[in-house]
Amino acid sequence: MSTFDDLTDAIAELVKQGMAFISETQRDGKTIYIVDSIGLTEDELILLHHKRALTRDGIRHYLVGRAA
Image (cartoon, rainbow, N blue to C red; front, top):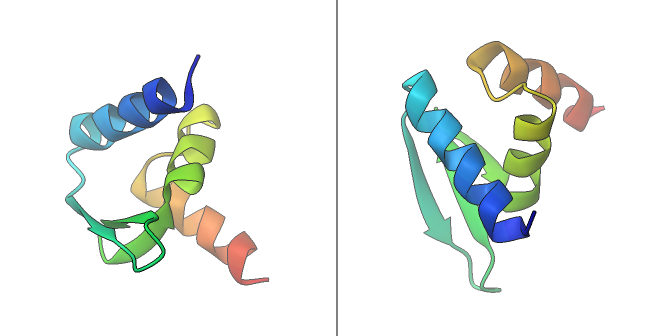
């Protein structure tokens, strides 16, 4: 599966979960997705989707590990 397809699936999962999000393009051209006021990269969205953790609790748990 391509990265584009993975990202599309991850975004679709956000919609299914009813999670509000917006996207912002950074100066370096990379897109950051703001999900419930949390900034996630495309790679992070795809990772969480593959782990079936693209939920509020899953993101919260991921953030704890990311901060460490």
